[in-house]
Structures are given as structure tokens and as C-alpha cells.
Image (cartoon, rainbow, N blue to C red):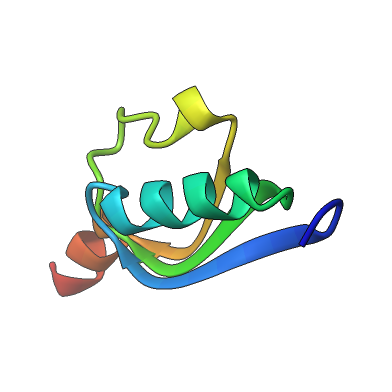
Amino acid sequence: MAGRRVTLVEDVVTTGGAVRDATLALRAAGAVVETVLCAIDRSPADAALLADLGLEVRALLTKAQLDAARD
């Protein structure tokens, strides 16, 4: 893994716990992890989840978008 760039793919991100654990394990193995792609980001709109790890979270849909579509 040393030096390999890895993008994490997750179905739903709410608290970021699984992504945090995976990022730390991959980085410990030498991988470069900077981006997370998720189908749905359920975290609060003003939350900067995983910013402390320097991760950019890219979501296909956010909870706010799903809520707006329901109205």
C-alpha cells in the first residue's frame, strides 16, 4: 500500500466512524487517502465530518437533498 492513492467508497456516511477507521488503517499501511465518495451523506449540513483527517467527502446526495425531494 505504501504510496498508493486510495479513494474510499461508502454507501452512507452519518458519523464517519467506519471511514475514519478505514482511513487510519490505510494510512498506517502507507496509503495516501484524501477523498471519500459516498452515495448518501446523512451528516448535519454544517458538520465538517472527517475534516480533522484532511478528508474531502463527496456525496451523490445529501440528507438535505433527500428531505427536500420528499416535500
